[in-house]
Length: 442
Image (cartoon, rainbow, N blue to C red; front, side):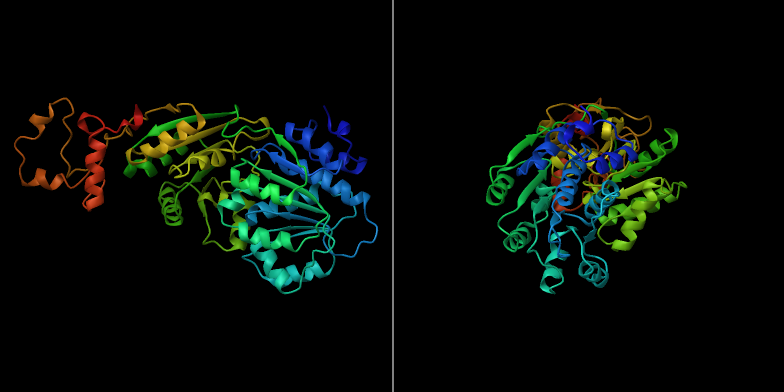
């Protein structure tokens, strides 16, 4: 199967060839002919499968074939959950539409709205937007939806996760009833199916990514480590294994900033990407990372989806996600388009529940690899007596003096557990195995 057999125009085939692609991916093989035929689509595809080109190419062709009565108002609307994904889709529209006389723009929050208003008033064919900014523009009468022929909901499940459902419904209520609807999502939950049912007309369902199945080109590995040693272990891995470029996921903005400062002490060029950054900063950071000007990008889950980073070799979970599905979304940043990649997770004992949930979700046990000098419990703070795992518990309980009683205020790995919740957590962890080792590494 080649792109030329999918019914695309000569101009689009030239653009695809210029981009270096020769064979369509499974989602493209199924979606492009169906969209060209005018069908509504429900496409289940993970990131990195060529999904964006799967709807962009036929959308461009349909708009080119039907240019009668162009008014300058948008004829295709693509809704995305994040600014980064909106910019990425817009880049693809420009790339594949380079030989066509179609105009497009992307609008999203975090930047001045006035240039976006000016661009819309100059006339466009394709509008890529995040829901919030689009509603702001509509409220200011800067955009009208009378001529929308094609609606695309990209990363629909992510939009629902982020609470955009009310905004989506408000936008859809403004659109013409007669239109083509294309919905793409990594997974199709019951809520997503209910949304699809309300906006699509006899959709063709395309499923090239069964739920929670990971690509074979990515290898997965767990490095058990005490929480306090995670930063040191990450630095060790980067330096000893010569990681040239890696995307590291932190659970919080503060954690991302703190990790960047810690890596800088070891002369590792790292930059944080999270919601506290302005849109201009986020755009510049992603551009520099793609151009290999940044070695390590430390990001919150804002970067988990929709970011197209070519040849990214390593994704690191510095913190495991609370939602197990997010593990799949995170590692989807590597191993794209047939390239190989590695997913590394630094897992401490307090994350054993998240690890168990992830392994249950993906129906496989992730390989454990202990790194010398970083095994859990190997690095013990000086004020905490070394553990005596080989002695019976009764022997360890004898002869407690004042300093030993004080040391009980810490968990087995040296983390502070002096709060009520911490004390309970410390007891719970110890109960998993004699000597306090968590069952997470079993």
